[in-house]
Image (cartoon, rainbow, N blue to C red):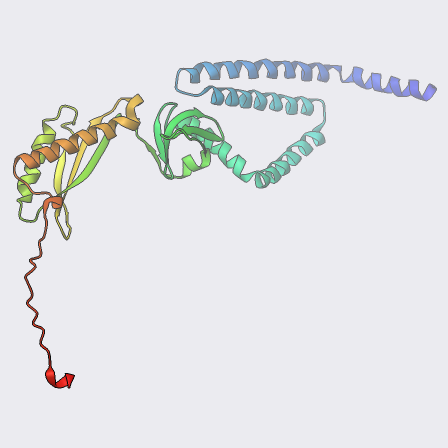
Length: 292
C-alpha cells in the first residue's frame, strides 16, 4: 500500500510540476480546434461562390480541419516534452504513407486526380462529355469517379485518373456543335457547281451559323461517284445536346438532296448499267457417218 501511495505521490508531483506546460498544451489544442473550424468555414464560403460540388467542399473542409488539428497535437506533445514520441509519429507516419501508397495506388491516384480536377474544373454537372469512347451527360462528380449517363440510359462511373490523364471532350462548354455528312454525284455532273449550290443552301438556313461558315468540298473519287463532304456549325442548347444535332443534320441532308435534284444532278444510286443480250442461232446437224 505504501508503494502505491508513493507512486501516486510521484505521479501527482510530476503533474504539478508540468502544470504550466499541460495548460499551454490544452489551450493550444482548443485553439487548433477552433482555428481549424474557422478556416474550414472560410474555405467553404469562398469556394461556394464558384461551381464546386458539395462532395469536394466537404472533403477539402475536413482535410483542412484535420491538418490543423494534427499540427496542434504535434506541437502540444512537443511542449510537454515528448520529443521522441513526436519524432516516432512523424517517422512512422511517413513509412505508413509509403506502404499505403503502394497498397492503394489506384485509389490514391484517383483521389489525387479528383483533388486537382476540383480546381481545374474541365466540366460541371449537366455537361455532355466524352472520354475513351464513352459519351454521356455528367450526373455527379465525386473525388474518385465521375458518374455519367449515356444516351441509351446506361450509368457509367469513370475513374478520375482516366479523366485527368486521357483526352477529355466537352461538347457543352461553348454550346457549339459541328455536323457533317457526305453525298455522292455522278462523274458527268459539275462537282464545283454542286459545291456552290450546297454552300448557298446551307448559308440560307437560319439554324446554321455563319461563323464558322459552312463548307462543301470534294472529299474523294469513289469508283461509282464523286464524294462531296458537307460541314456545318450550329448552336445547341445544353439540354438538347444529344438529339438536336442529329435532328438538324437529317433536315439539312434532305435540303441538300432536294437542291441537287432541282438542278438536275444525278446521284450515284440513279446511275445504272445495262447489258444487251442478242439472240444466238444454234444449228444442230446429224452426222450420218458417226451413226453407221
